[in-house]
Amino acid sequence: MSDFVVNSKLYTPEICLIDEEELERDREYLMQMYPARARMIMVLVEDECDRLEYEGSPMFAMFPDKETLRRIADKIYNKVKYKDDDNELRHLIEVMLCNEFFVRRSRYKRRRRFF
Image (cartoon, rainbow, N blue to C red; front, side, top):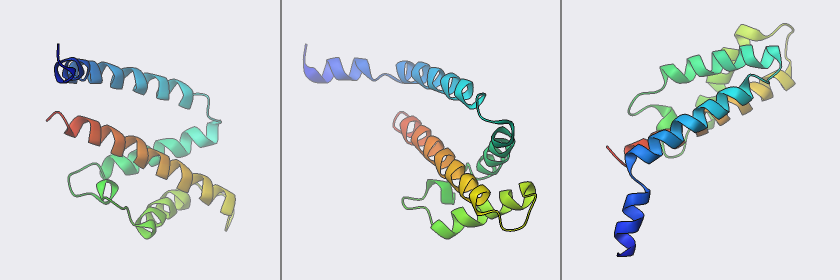
């Protein structure tokens, strides 16, 4: 059997979708261990990312703009801040947002290969 046939059988969409579901369950399980405030922030991050999950979105740009990320993070920050100018909280939100962008961009790229 040629290498192409073996490799193409290993990377069928069905296998990748099963792996995708398993990865998502694992991710959700680990996110349940976040501190309560971080879980609340993560809900807002996911909400903002849901709004950006469309073709041509800044989320899926080859090189996402840092200012766009900061504007989205600021929008979330303004909803959760409890004192003025809490840079640690702002940084946490930016990190969570970048991570969520990465997760969604990776999933988008994997699925795009098959469709």
